[in-house]
Image (cartoon, rainbow, N blue to C red; front, side, top):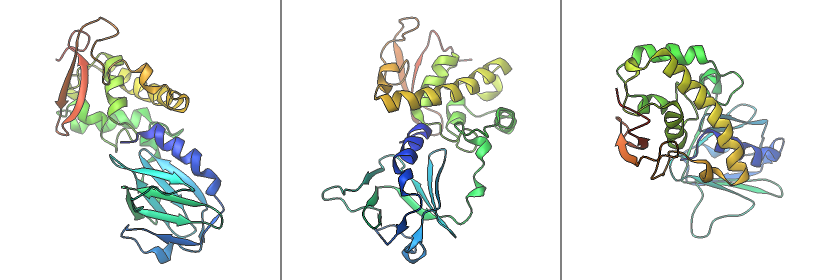
Length: 241
């Protein structure tokens, strides 16, 4: 599933469509295509893992989910696009994605987006108090608190902070919570630079790793939390409380 940094790359790749008119729209998305045809793109925005193609009176919201993808000025063979946007001389296609029309994108809290310049650490800490019994692996994946964090970021952040993924929020010291949040924001921007350079996997210390690069201990692969997402962790560096 594309994480926050990958959405910023997507935004950059399609920003040149801003100001262009959608002369035709089609696909098997269950939206009213009449609401987006013959409309000019005003801007392109992101929030966490969500992309917004903003029109004068509506917004196309796209979430690539686990297997979503997109193409610019070409189509995939033998696969119908969920959303096809035709411009005068170009086209944009999205595949296996969630697509809907969202008139008001202000419902998405920019202070919860770890890559937004409006990110609010204090607000994130406040949101942790009512969910003290939740495991930190599930908490980091909560998009209402850490929009943009995906499984790779989760694993790398917890390894850096030396926190076991099954640790409950209430068992974390204030310094550990601060460390997790600091590393989440910092690593997200590192992820972006590695992804642009095509070197992301070369810098993984936890995700998909067999040995801990810090202590040499074997890494554990386990499906953790209510979400049952895969976690990679070192039992020597990341001791469960």
